[in-house]
Length: 146
Figure 1 (cartoon, helix red, strand yellow):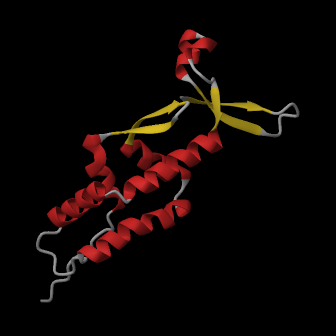
Figure 2: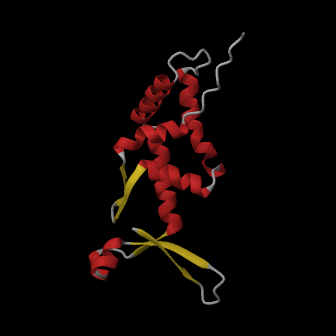
Figure 3: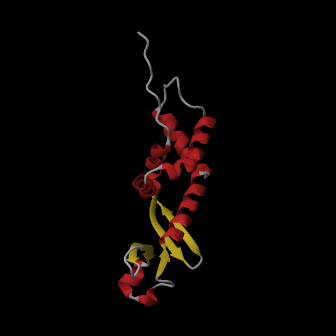
């Protein structure tokens, strides 16, 4: 799917949608459907990403990364606090700028496949660590007392 848009007759409104890339390359008969509303597709993708963030293997990867980055920190978060922080990520999503949202999704998703049965995300397995590093809260600097 590739993004596209069109304007209303009076040129005031923009309608965003995604077009099947096979339709562009091979013609109308190459896909079951030619386009899908941008809002619908983006909402479905975001729902799947939120479910993914709650997946135990992602949480485990984030925990491993956090502990590897902060092996000697006295102010390290507990496992419970860190898991709560990962799950709160859903709550702050709407507060991120669209460019930040886009960058996070690009770190995580290699391809979005739309079929008549549903929408499937192909994940960059090698970048789960990068994604995890992005959503792990920054560790406060250690204070040294002289």
